[in-house]
Amino acid sequence: NAGVTQTPKFQVLKTGQSMTLQCAQDMNHEYMSWYRQDPGMGLRLIHYSVGAGITDQGEVPNGYNVSRSTTEDFPLRLLSAAPSQTSVYFCASRRRLAGVSYNEQFFGPGTRLTVL
Amino acid sequence: GQNIDQPTEMTATEGAIVQINCTYQTSGFNGLFWYQQHAGEAPTFLSYNVLDGLEEKGRFSSFLSRSKGYSYLLLKELQMKDSASYLCAAPNRDDKIIFGKGTRLHILP
Image (cartoon, rainbow over all chains, first blue to last red; front, top):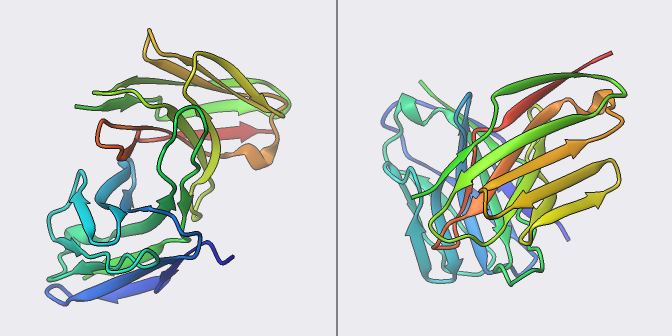
């Protein structure tokens, strides 16, 4: 299993450009999430999906779109990049929480995005 | 709403024991996670507590008190490789996992 994969690893954009961060998992996990991590802010949830065709907003959704057409893929789109979106982006996946059994959330290696 | 608090930074000595605290307020409790994150890397899972008490896994233990909204991560026999950030996280009522800001642990030789 490759686990959670993310592409690209690094990206530099100019203000106003658009791009899609790719995320895929091969563990047949129902839940997938996108987080951003900024110094001193910890991981903040951007968008979230509990299955194909179902998405929901997290703590900081503005400026980002997502879709979940398959169980495996959960791309994150920046429609018009802004310097405030400079961050490290992590995709994660897990099974649904079930009682006392733990459901580890697996993270991808991250995408380091700079918006000039 | 949901609020998770943990200290920003801690320093400990190699070979010693350190306890990292986490307090939380959630709209519906369904367990608490601890993750480790080395600089420049992705977070990795350490523990998940849903019942009160202490769970031990080698040099790492995690404790939960649901009535107090409190958890701690205990690291024993500290090694230099334990220098990392430790993240406390909990699912909210919508089953979204929300993270605290993390505690950066520095280990001194």
